[in-house]
Each structure stands twice: as C-alpha cells, then as structure tokens.
Picture 1: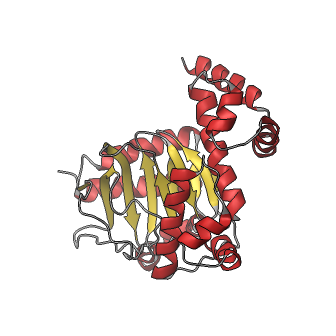
Picture 2: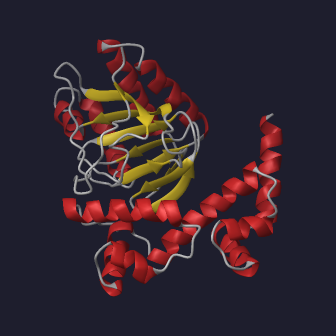
Picture 3: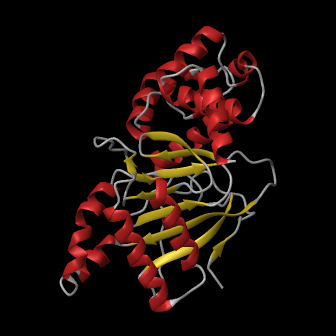
Amino acid sequence: MPFRRRKNTAAIPRTVPAFEHIVTEASESFLWRLDDYPWERNVWNFHPEYEIHLIRKSSGVVLVGDHIGEFGPGYLTIVGGGLPHDWVTAVQPGELIEGRDIVLQFDPERLRGSAGLLPELRELEPFLERSLRGMVFHGRTAIDGAGLMERMGTVQGLTRFRLFLELVDMLARTDEYELLSSPDFSPLLDAASLDIIQRTLTYLFQHFAEDLKLPEVAALAGMSESTFSRFFQKNTGNSFSDHVAKLRLWQACKLLADTEIPITDICFQVGYMNISNFNRAFLRKHKMTPSSYRKLSRQRLALRT
C-alpha cells in the first residue's frame, strides 16, 4: 500500500513553522508518497531534502523561489534543498482533490556520500547544482518522468530504487527543462518570516481580483508599509505589485483558454480597472495580446484533439 497523505481536518495554528521535517523509513533511500489536496503541509515551505514533484490532477499557481507560474496535469519539477516552494489550487470549501500530487524527496548527501563506492554518482553533481534554483521539465522528459514516478508507487525495495536511479539519471541528462528561481534569490528562512509570508501569500491568492492596497496588506502582516515592502521583496523575490499582477494574469490566461467570457469582462474579473492597463500588462508579460493568446490556445487544443 503506497504511503498517502490525506487532508488533516484539524485547525492549523498560524504560528506553525513552514519547515517540513522529512522522515524516510530506515529501509528506504528516499520518500515516495501520494498526496491529496489540500493538506496541512501544502504551504510555502522548505526543507534540506530535494523534492521531485508531479502534479497528476488540477491546475493552479506554482511558487518556486521568486518564480510564479502556472501548472496543470503532468507538471514535473525538482526543487533543491532550502528553496521555498508551493503548488496552489483554488478549491471550494470542503473540496478534496484525491491524489493530486506524487512527491519524491531525497537527501542529496546520501548520493554524494555513496559516490566514493559508486563513482558514477559523481555525474549527478551538475544536476544537483542546477536543481538548487528549481527546474521544470517538458516534452518527452516530463511524460517519461511522470510514468516512472507512477510506477514507483506500485513496487518496493530494489525495484523502486532502480526506478529512482533511472528517473534521476534521465532528469540529469535531459535538455528539456527550464530553470525557475533567480540565482540571487535568498529569502529569510526562519519560522516567523515564513509564517508571515505564507499567510500573506494565501491572502493574496484569495483576494488578488479585489482592489488590494499595500498599506492594508502590510497592516495584516503587522508591519509598516516600507518594512513590509522590503520584507516581501526579500522573501518572495517579487515586489508586492508584481506579485499581484502575476496572479491576475495567471487567472486571465485560464479564463482566456478555458471559457468564452469576453475579454473586457475578464479584465474586470481578475482585478484590472480598465482594459488599457490590462492589455498593456498582458502584452508585457506574454508578448502577445489577450485575443492572440485565446486564439493560440484554441489552436493548441485543436491540435491535441
């Protein structure tokens, strides 16, 4: 029976540190688990272990270091030790997405320590270094990597370990990837800072379509406006206004691709006050107009079907 994390229905204290303690069985070299969503550890968190993360269902916003992007089924990433991360899906109260994620976590020092006996493992060092910024895989690599992670849930022992080595080797050799976080991103990884950032990110995700004001959000964090601005930039890598804009444009892309809602209506639904500002922001971010994005999304969907 695969190890599966389900939603914890107990209230989560706001002061819980977002440092995730990874416990690997003595008989295993790495942790493999199937996660439902939401779950109490699905927060802006970090840990010294590396994490290979597969989204099996749903879509949403991915936060890795100072990167903000979107994900859907088949989204495969690796996040290096100490790099904060979160995959956020908008759910209704009481909604549970069963088996949304497959999570694989391992200690890189085990691999490095084993290189004395197994010299071939030294070939992984450049990959481990790249992973410290977070990597997302695409193309054949993402498809094959997802298949390997699914198969790991059906086996144990040496067979699972063999699949792990096959996966890591494939991810280390492929050129079908993008780096996510900036090389100079360096957040304050203390429990109090992460707790404030987690609560702030959650609030922004829930209210980004509203008329958000920096002083109001700073007050919620218990800080002055200037202190909060510096704190937010340091710990997310984005300014407050840039972060909100990225969330709004992510939602706009979903609505453009998945609905027939008029573009003017989408503009107001995601929090922009006029269509000119919306068009400029969208063009700056995606290098095309909203109407062009919708047309391209339709063409891609037609090709897949």
